[in-house]
Length: 278
Image (cartoon, rainbow, N blue to C red):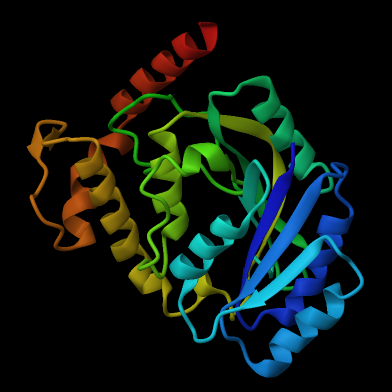
């Protein structure tokens, strides 16, 4: 089973060496890495090109203009030749057994569409700060699941055959393209939580989620959730009417506030326990 590591690069060559080295240390051998540069500065592109030049497992391409992360990641999936795909940001890294542990889950169950684990937040030098503790197995087949609050997180991998049966990644999204993908894959198969921390997430001042784009992320995420509601044919949620058109994220997240309440979480835990006993 071949695995395609997908890397959307944009002016991050200073950190890419850590990502590159982490891929070379993988215990699973059958993988490729496809890098699509989203019209970085020429020297940034050349730095990446120089680093990977002696490793045939890496392929490097470049957009002819800056297209944004949604477009870039959609193209990466199109080019992937592996049955399983997983995104790794160029400024992050994965642990040596990350790919192997994911592939094992896909091999065990052909109905699994997506796997995920926990990540570790790191500083700019990729030194661990804290583990993301909210990642856990979620109930499958729940039409009201929208990954709110976030439980599906890095390291996320997915089966390309199932992805091709979805509406595919929205190339217009500038942020929250990952949440959009997770919800689409959730609707087409089973998601499986791997109870390990397999991803090193670097926090630094150049990161998309650490700069001014963070203010916009809720709008894109809200739009992704709204689109999922419409795909699933939902008219109401928790007794409240879902709007016909998307206006702003507050309206969508307000509909989902009940999912933070302890009664809801308790019921979910019981349903999840029953799911594991089947």
